[in-house]
Length: 247
Length: 261
Image: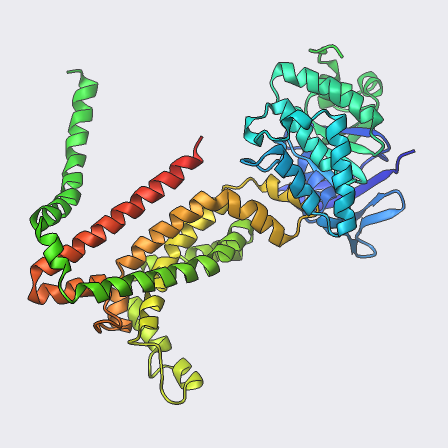
């Protein structure tokens, strides 16, 4: 049984006001929405890097942010793993050096030792051993995303968030990575939040979808629930797009 | 010849006038110095000035890099309006005439300044010492380093920093493990440009440090002195400075070329 992530956030970034209460995230929730709807901004606010005016973020019993009590755990201590669209790996460094970096970021020697063990396990599980000495810039898009995912997991996170994890990939590796990711996420014992604007990705990756439009949640549910009763034109078009790639 | 080529040629010829104007004096200087270069360098004025130029510019470079790198990092990472204003103000010493900078330094740190009165009752001040030379050089050359460093830091993907923070990285670790290594080529290029500016510094040094042989007389000031007595010596020193400038220019090209894949 995984912890439940509950997210309720309100804040302004530029001209966009975000005001969202997400459905409780237990396994994988995919946040979909048109470009500029505030999907990535919502993730940044959740991580604690963008200012939040009001709301509450908790994982299980642990409160990460609560505007009424003034609680705000700093980004560095939230233990929310985040994988950005372009992987966020340190370029001109090897894969090994990127893992070493994540290990060194552990606050205590115990934490660093734990991270070392997490890293070793996840490198093994994702079959990344053969890539360890490769420089990040020489990796393919799919390899880069796997390494980024593995590196994010070695902090032993409470939850995982990914921003358009497949958007930077070409068609072939995208399909491959999508299938891999769907299988992988099913076994992952932590709640996962994925942001995507792609119908195929959303359909394959998330049992549960939440629709964000102009900073607000307009609908949530399973793919078939959304398709059966679309609450907006965006949802109608999104769910009626024929699948390009079979699962 | 097509119309396209013809008009390109006209534009090229107009622009060529400026290029010719920029290169000719340097070529004449180098050409007319010729073999007199080495005999000119033997003049007693040259060696102390060369030593002083080297030691003061290296010191000012060190100060500018050590203090300027964190400043550039903070300015580059901040999105506040204050940081934007600060960034613009930091370029002031580039547009302020060096002589004005010299007067400003003299008024602030000179013998009759408030600072001097407060910290040194016996009237000591850095003016007209080698320290004044370093201060003048740092003042005029720092903006060149800062500008290059800020833009190098700004080219680093903001996501890299955010990811590092989610991994638990402290600001210092982000600075040392991501900021410095990824901006290194830009920092080296900025250091070289700023060093070149310090080597050529004349106006502020003359005002604030004077032209004292062996103490404040750097190479550009030695040229000034030599012009009155022995033109050949002035030429030789000039050629030395041209060579140093060329070397630094090549260095800048090399490190910045490495950046683009």
